[in-house]
Image (tube, rainbow over all chains, first blue to last red; front, side, top):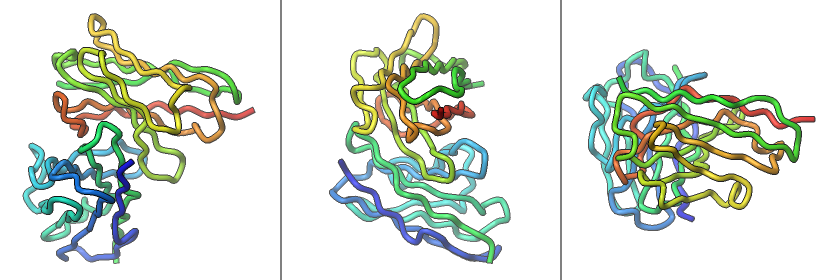
Length: 107
Length: 119
């Protein structure tokens, strides 16, 4: 199985900050990576697919980059609604795997 | 509006069985692969199983292989997960999720159904 490792596990930031979350794959996954946002008690929401494609309706302050084994999710200017947990997911293989999650909390 | 609604969760004893359903609406169900993803209390997301649009190809996480069976009825726009030999570690919220054709990222999610395995 392809292992996905996110860092950091927890990130403290303030409204207006620029933040970056990293996701590393145990082997090359080309650009077959998605990012999700999840709030407590809610289902995950797709933000980014194919590493850098923004899902319709997602604010442009979210962006994704990377290919191969290293990927990043960047939020250019944090808004109060952005404090949540973020997950990466590879779909290079039919045996899908998620990262362990990054909790973004208010500083 | 694209919608997924899960049902069938509940409390079951270890070793028991349960069948989850996911009713889909608002899109051509048979054109899209579907997945089940679960989340244990306080834990991260874990992919459980996926199925192609036709139902001809199925995939399972090692943790459920041989115990769970994914299926779909395209005439009823419904996805299923038959869960047998349930264990305490299967306790989780189970989400049904739609993929974008045969690209297995998940663009639409249901609200989830809770499965609790306990005596």
